[in-house]
Image (tube, rainbow, N blue to C red; front, top):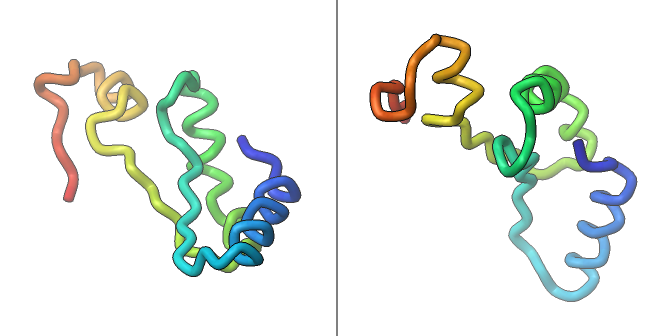
Length: 79
């Protein structure tokens, strides 16, 4: 999980350079284990301190279909 202090500094840097629209993406998947993904999911509330919208993209991720003992082709898609 990203260090919130470092992430806060990056947000400040972006805003100081004129970036207005910032969305926090904790990065489900992307080389993480299922345990890492559920750790992020269980701690999403910590990201609220950054006062930015949080993007949660878990549709068809292995953390869903493996938990359901399924495969990606037959995994449900969430909208």
